[in-house]
Image (cartoon, rainbow, N blue to C red; front, side, top):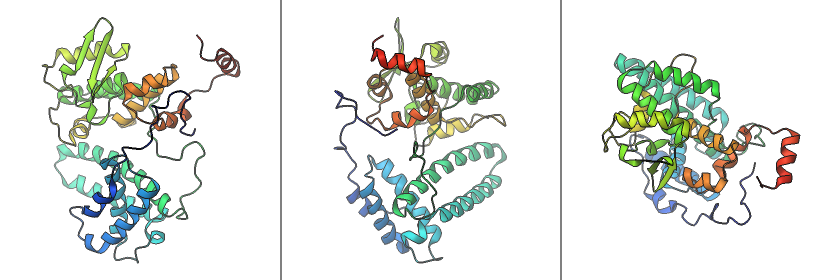
Length: 336
């Protein structure tokens, strides 16, 4: 489903007037810990410039993710071949790089303290998936003939899939088997993710950010108020009763950039259950509201979305209506 703009709602999908000014930032960019940086810098900047021209980044974070993908592949190929877009950005190179990093991560995890191995492995498994998605996205743009395979007509971007009801049940069971801080982290992640669509740093909300009234509970986050789904209100109230006003609902009180990942990694998930992913919880929350017929503009405001793209990405996961129901809905034209 293509990203489109609904009639009469021109503010929903604004023009990218606030796009990140990447040119000056890229000219100064220099990663830490890359021994061959001087040898690959010109190629990295040239490739990143071409990618950003085709797909302008909307933030420093998105620009950094793309450049890191280019740096990773360039450093991996440095010394093996002349760096060109046709030798660096190929599906084969991406798979070789991912396998190499996976083996390296496993060795590093095995060498650490036994008590930290599960958390370390969980963090790396999550970041590995994000890393590969950027490698594929950047590679396909810079070298379309790199053997990427046919593009899906319904999905041209990497999209975190929502959880199924069965997967949610497995996650709930796994979280309930944890104790202490790990259990609180898991409960807060699920309640805030499935109940209010919070993910990333938005999960670092404090108890004082939750406003209880006769209309329910609203969470104030990043300049907006998000109503909590009624079926999660009691569980959120239980979390609030155990917290002081300045406490974060996640058991961890850290606020550095990896605080959420570290908190989630503490939660032990049973074998056979899906990984606990705040991003997938948020997708599940969004999909539930879309399936329930929540007004798109209202949902975008609650979710903090500035573009219809995340909404259109989820259209593929919406259940199909029967011909009779679809016809009746279209005949009503939105009238209830």
